[in-house]
Amino acid sequence: MRIGVAATPAVALPSLNWLLGSEHDLVTTISVPDKASGRGRVLTPSIVAQWSQEHGIPCLKPTQSEELIGHLEKLDLVITIGYGVILPEKILALPKFGFINLHFSLLPQYRGAAPVQRALLNGERITGVTVFGLDKGMDTGPIYVSHTCAIEPTWRASELLDALSQMGPQALEESCEMIAKGEIPKIQVGESSLASKVSVEEARLDFNHKAIRISNQVRAFYPSPSAWTLFRGDKVKISRLGPISDTNNLRVGELAFDGKKLSVGCGNSESIEIVELTPAGKNEMKASDWARGARILPGEIFG
Image 1 (cartoon, one colour):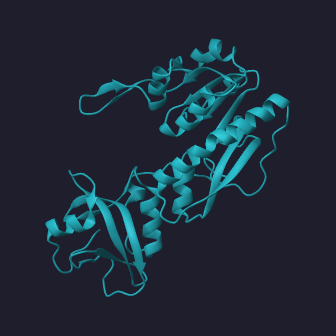
Image 2 (tube, one colour; image 1 turned 120 degrees about the vertical axis):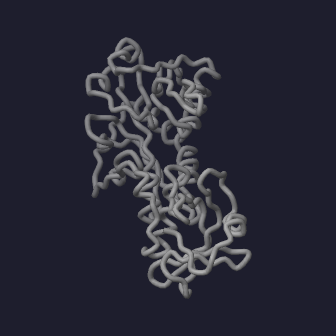
Image 3 (cartoon, rainbow, N blue to C red; image 1 turned 45 degrees about the vertical axis):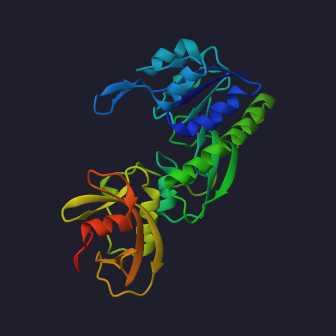
C-alpha cells in the first residue's frame, strides 16, 4: 500500500523504521510546522521531520489541514502517531482506506492526550497499544489490533512510552494486513475513560498524600512536566524515588538525611526515599549530593 504517516514525537520512530523496510511504500510523512526553540529561538523541525530528511522521505508541514487534500487523495492509508492535530471528517475520508491511529492504551480506556501519564498516575499494572480507525470522535473508532503490556514497578512515563513505541510496528503490520484483506475492525466495547492533558500545577507534590500516590506522580510526570515541590522558596523537580517506609517519625513533607539517603515524610505516617532530583537552575543530580550541598536543617520541609 501507498502509506503516509502523520506524526510528531520520537515515539513514532520505531514504526517509521519498520515501515521504511516493509513491503509498503512510505510516500510521505506529515508533521507540525517548525517551531522556535532554545535560547536563540531558532526554528527547529519536529523529530519526525528530522527523521524524514535523514531518510529522504518528503515531509509535509501544513498550517491548515486543507493543504493536505491533493496529497491524501493519492494515498491508500494514513497512519497517525501522536500527530497532535485534530483532522476534520472530510480529510479523514480522502485516502482509499482512511486513517488509522496507534494509541498508547487499551481502548476504550484512557482516550485522550495523556494515556501513559494517566495510567501511571492511577497505578495501573497493565496497559498496551491499540490500532483503530479514526472517526470524528476522540479515540472512539473501531479497533483493528490491541496488544497488552505489563508495567514494570520502576517504569516512569519515559520508560513506558519507549516500551509501547516498540510494540507499534507489530500492531501496525497486523492492522495493515487486515485492511489489505478487507477485514472489518471491531466496535469499541466496555467502560471508557478519559486521559486529559497533564498540567504543571497538577504535577506539584502534596506530601499529605500516601507515599504510593507521591510515587505514582513522580513516575507519571517524568520527564515532562516533572513532579515538583518547593524548598526554601525555590522549585525542586523530583525525578526518581526509592523504597517506601511505613514507619517513620517525620512530619508531612519533613526531610531527613543520614549522610547517604534522603527521605521525606508523607501521609499515613509513611516516608519515601528521594533518589534523583533537579534543583532550580541546575542539572539533574543524585538527591544525596544535593542534600550534602543544601545542608538541610532539622525540621526543614518540602512543600
